[in-house]
Image 1 (tube, helix red, strand yellow):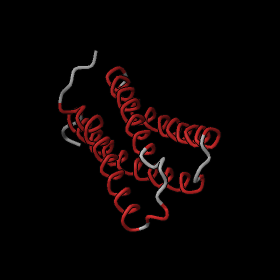
Image 2 (cartoon, helix red, strand yellow):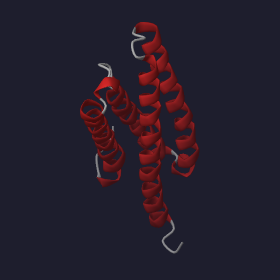
Image 3 (cartoon, rainbow, N blue to C red):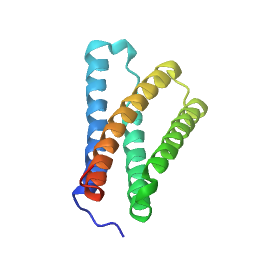
Image 4 (cartoon, rainbow, N blue to C red):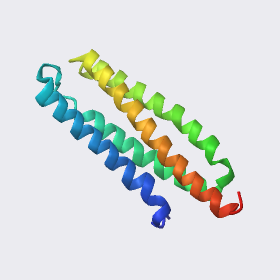
Length: 138
């Protein structure tokens, strides 16, 4: 069972909140700035990345409790899993919907890179804190 404390807040609260903020800003830009580029399936992208962040963050937290020395390796593995998940998401969209395919691909990969950038920053801060607890003189 997962016990919530301040070390878990970053990946489980801040990352999904940042993704939701990116989604709202992106929606506002598309609706008011470039309405001809807005597509009705746009809200699906932030929802996908929020769900992905919850699942991968929970997995990483559980893994980190069991083998904290392997966190960096697990994080890199998860980056590959996230890329494959995004590709599977786009494939499903292509097979089931196909409407505005180019806009969906471009927007999904923009979110993917924003998501990875934000997550990498949060992971760096978390690991830095953890290493300072383990080795306070370094």
